[in-house]
Length: 70
Image 1: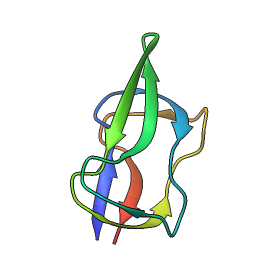
Image 2: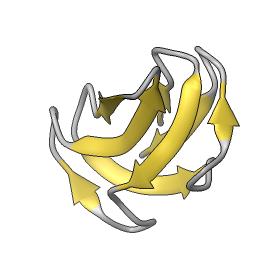
Image 3: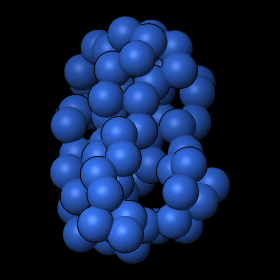
Image 4: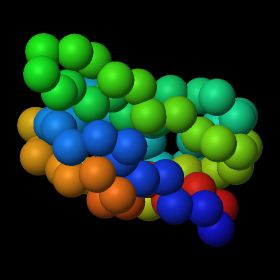
């Protein structure tokens, strides 16, 4: 299992995956918005999306787990 965390404090602008999706390293999982800039959160390794721990428009802090890959 691999936790994918927010690398910045911001707002979840868009969730690009759903539970059960298979992703590769570098796949954009979530797009965060911070200071009017869109920042992609990418998978560091491949796997299957096991959990999505955020919702669109949710405020998140740096280090919050957004997606769990298995």
